[in-house]
Amino acid sequence: MLLLSFFVLAELLSQVSGSSLFKVWIYYAGNACDGTPYNTYAESDTSCTIASCFEDGNTSATGVGVAWVDCTSDYKTSARDAFKSSPYIFVEAFSDPSCQTLSYAQGFFASGNCEGSPNLNSSEAAHVIAKLQPDGSATLQYYHHSTCDGSYLYATYSASVDVLGTHECDENWSKWYYVDGDDSFHPSTSSSASPSIDEDTTTDHSGGIKTSTVVGIVVGGGLVLVLVGLGYCCCSRRSTAKLPAESETQQLPTASLQSRDTASLDIASCGQTGLWNDDIITAKRIPRDKVRVKKLISRGAFGEVYEGVFNGKRVAIKMLLPETRAQLQHVNDFLGEAKMTASMDHPHVVSFVGVAWDALSDVCVVLEFMDGGDLRVLLSKYEESRRPVGFDAQKTTIALHVCHALTYLHSLMPPVIHRDLKSRNILLNRAMEAKITDFGISRERLDQTMTAGVGTSLWMAPEVMLGERYDVKADMFSFGVVLSELDVHTLPYTHAKEQTRDLNGRRQPDAAILQQVAMGTLRVEFSDTCLRSIVELGHACISLNPSDRPTAAEALYRLQMIMSREMA
Picture 1 (tube, rainbow, N blue to C red):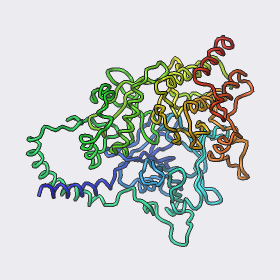
Picture 2: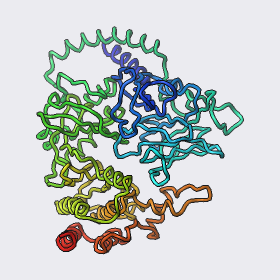
Picture 3: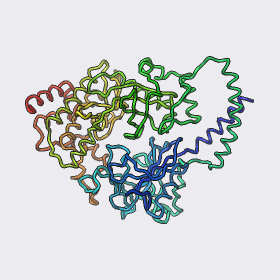
């Protein structure tokens, strides 16, 4: 009978977990939460709390920093209610190519004018023009400046008429919707009625059961839980087995998922081999209740970084996204990154402080806090302020520090390939000392051929793009791209995108750019005022043939010579 009750409860919890709770940020211009919002942002949050109009520090870069927080199981309806009769573009972003696992959903006021955008990641653009084009497609143009001047264009995303009408999963793992002032979709690609924003033709991310049903299930399930709990208490007295999770848990801003998946994860950790039992991880484990999480710094496709405090010291706290915290593979990969970082010991690699958890679904990695931000933010400021391009002593020092770190990584036995070196993964302190971070996809160099396509595309070496064999020289290509960024301040290949627009004035898509890079017909630019020695080093690093690229040690020597002879 007890076993039957357990299976009944498991089924009930399974149905309840299908109805997720979402936190929806609604952002307004001015200092009052009225009128039409310029943006909505929704993500799963089981501990969501409604908040009335308040100033939000994450939008400080936009100058329009008031927000309202709604908690709902239907984020689409919440967005529709917020925009009222105003047109908007709605995008669901997923963490998989089949668009099954939602990462977040965002609504953009489709005014065709320069609007604010929540600056959830300080390295992202702060203003957006959302617009329905005359041909029926939709575009989102991101800018680094409130004027939305063309010279500050950061990125453009678009959806065709077909994608808007069918809401199919696009190449960027997203689904698009356009809602005009009368709550109807535009346009429809078939003779049948357009699907409602509340009706997804492939998956339902807003839950499949009503709130009243959930309440009934929870109440009924609670009674079963009492019976199961009594049986468990009797049985547990006869067993000395313990889960790795400790008895007390601390509530996080985005709380760990208290669901059947979470329970399964912790139970699995008892019976499976995982990195939570690794000697390095256990040696670096710190008390979870000593880690105090404060404000959100950034949010990416796979994780979040918060500012916090540990033992009275300012730290950075890295966590998985709420929707992936209950997945054993994600947790194990996350701990793999922690182990990799913990094994590093170099003045130009961000220091590892420790790893903490009460339950494995609540793992966080504590790192050194770099109060100068990332290099991409600094270069964007240089671009916005029209700072002269070229290399000076400060930029050369940053390049030197990065090269020191690469030399260290590549000298380890076996060598470590970073595989995602870019300006956003180079952090600075107030003294302008540079350190590299984010070893999420770094791997020790193994004997077998390494062909996995990883890294961030615009910094990626051609051999990695093409799925060919690669080694530490892939990092040197990325370093050459970073040298170009340091010189001209813009993102890689911006010059090519600007110079090769189509008949409609649209810039080349990244796919076309990368194809040219892989074929050797396009490379990053260096300014006319840049030191010839830096240009030569940069061109050597981005050589199409990996064997023609310098090693990190060789590049380091050349930079040291440049520093002593040309920067003295």
